[in-house]
Image 1 (cartoon, protein in one colour):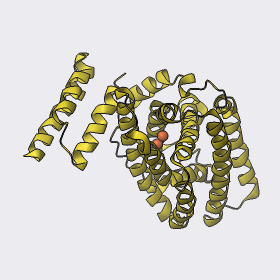
Image 2 (cartoon, helix red, strand yellow; image 1 turned 90 degrees about the horizontal axis):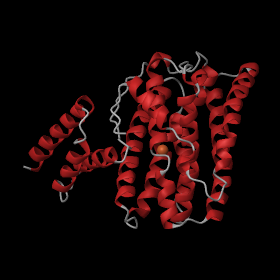
Image 3 (tube, protein in one colour; image 1 turned 45 degrees about the vertical axis):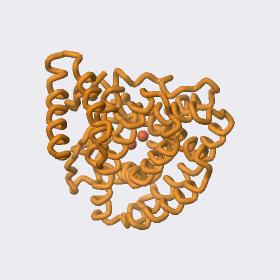
Length: 321
Ligand SMILES: [Fe+2]
Ligand SMILES: [Fe+2]
């Protein structure tokens, strides 16, 4: 019976999400709210996913269940037809499934302490979005594995680091998530904004990275807003940012060079060329990175809403705001 109810409501939900942008009527949030009230006591995995989607939609953080079919023959060269640069983005992809699970868990640690309904809905949207990102990056990581990279070794190394991080106090873990979500937020904004950058990503891989960038921009403030409510220590926030930055760049550099080695991409001039290109990308991020150290910082200092709307339109996404 519960399954029938769930299926019926899901169909209504899908119908409302299709109709809303067509009819331009504002009943979509109302329908979502009605479903949420109706399903208040229903508890299973499917319904939890549904609830995240409904709640996320209400606050502009819709988890979009994108299944992107990536062609394995381009896995080595989808960025600028350059395997040295492509390996860098593949290196980031290796970090996402475990890294985003850590982000989600660090926020979940505090979910029971949040009383603000809007922030609770944003947390649901954040968890839903990160879950779909992890699933799609796992698919990409399978292709990376098949292309000759020993992904299991990198997974084990990352697990070792994150297991240490999980032993830290929950407020430190949340501060680390705020720091790294600042990275994904400003990198996502850059990817959407810089046409030289985003036009370099080819084939279906462009859909994957742009979709991920849109959603990183949409939920970039969630962990920070949780942190502001439950801890709000400026000193802890900036110390953890400095530590997280050191660890992040050390891990990325280590993984990237080892991946190049495994792929036998050892031409020093090509490596230097790729490192200069990537350094310029990161150099452009420095002003936005430094914003984090202002006492009154908030991730919304950089408005991504126009970029989100433009790219959502181009990719045919439904966007509630
Ligand atoms: Fe993500
Ligand atoms: Fe994120």
